[in-house]
Image: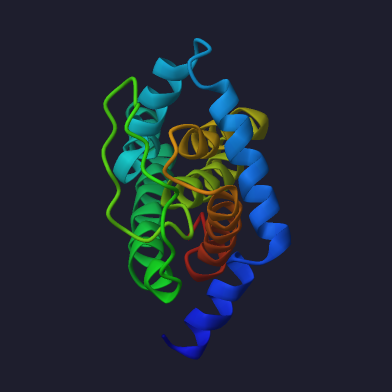
Length: 186
């Protein structure tokens, strides 16, 4: 194990992080089976491979004019690059086990094969919410959707809360960096 992985593993295994992860997992377990499962599973599945966010961008490109088309294409390209970074080198830098596998899933769920840290769903959600808010306004709508998508990953039992928090931070950071490297109206 490299020094970076050792330090990251120690931070993720620290008592405060473990307490947050356990408390959140307990809350998610208590909420399961209370009526929202199907919607949360469907939303989680719809966000696989950022399809939810690409779909929103496609609708914007179809109903908007040329400026909307350019911005929608930019957002989809950026979220695709963001996901390549998160699901490649970033997840590889901190190889973290996912929560114990649940065998009581009431609905279909794709089993992730990558490291648990950070959550790719949460990073794509935060990256997309940042860009959609800047391009289309309605920040509360996009951030609410991003928050629910992020929560679904804890609810379905494939991520720790700390994975989701880190994913949100990474996605937001990469969206902000994209504004510097590829400004919206260039």
